[in-house]
Length: 444
Image (tube, rainbow, N blue to C red; front, top):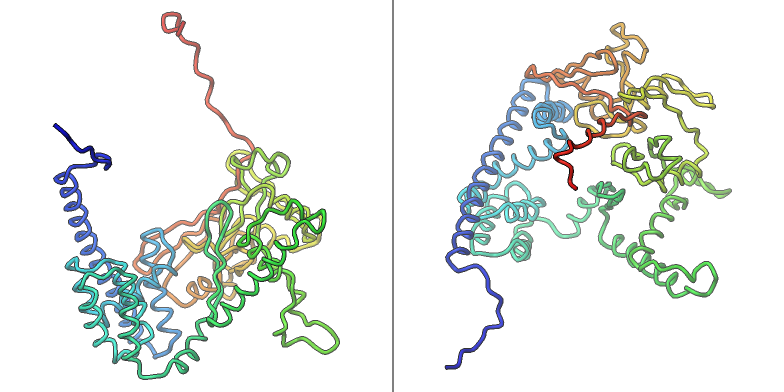
């Protein structure tokens, strides 16, 4: 008898795989229904904000403050960022109000979140009057079993046909969205993302690539370049950082024929906290890491390089050896003592959940100065511009407790405490060594 052996490795039986597939589809449908329910709730929150705004004199500032107030209430309850929640509310309102067919298909499990986000992204540039037709076409097209990637290609063609304006006109509006943002990553790395006109973005990337290849092609010409083993992407990133941190831009309105303007003299600012033990002993960096405020841990080599290279005076922060609370600050250079203390204590904006560094925040009187609040560290704290405005123009209230603790009260009466983040304690107490084993328990 001859039996042909199969080269395919044994796998799960068809029944087992079918059961897993059924469970994945069932839970996916449940997740979709829950996500739709959350979207409806977020949209309702946004409509509540609009209802509050309708009772006040109409203005874009009033509408923004009403939406911020609602977003802050939800974010504090979820220990989230109010900026993120506000974005979610705005997106949910768009989905519920402008894309009912898409929302229904998602609720019934015919679409995934990725399909829905694709529909919203492609439909975003369309005017409100064209979205109803686009919604119907998009939901029908997506239900045909297309992947999000293929759906995006199909919808782009459909959306173009519904546009009442030309590409040139829309590009002029699109230019208004150009921006630069930082997305914090892992291991001390982050993404610097620039939204630019496509021609400029492609041109920048091409120039960086040509410069990187030139550097790589000249390796070995000098003793300094013999050991350079960087890849093209790495050299491209290094050139970008070098140019942005050191070059003077030509688009400088303060520039004169006699020389460069003031933009070229501006230098980057970051806020770093470095434990002294880490400076002295790099092996301590995992136990007491240096921190780039607002972004996360920083490796000891980078922290030490910054300390050696900067001409800006460092503030010495004396902390409690056990709790890490700030006790005292000083410096050999004459600066404002209160500002120095608050930077060390607060490190970042003191609104619940906010991580904007103190150096980009404003020092606010917890009890307004005009109402008798003292200019004292017990009545001062850092707030970023966004949350400084919210404190003034929304129904959030705050009072400062001992040790710099801020107690925030939301419009619904919930309270949230924001405590200063303690520095790494200088002393650490370890548990006692375990007692020696009894003779009967000895392992020998």
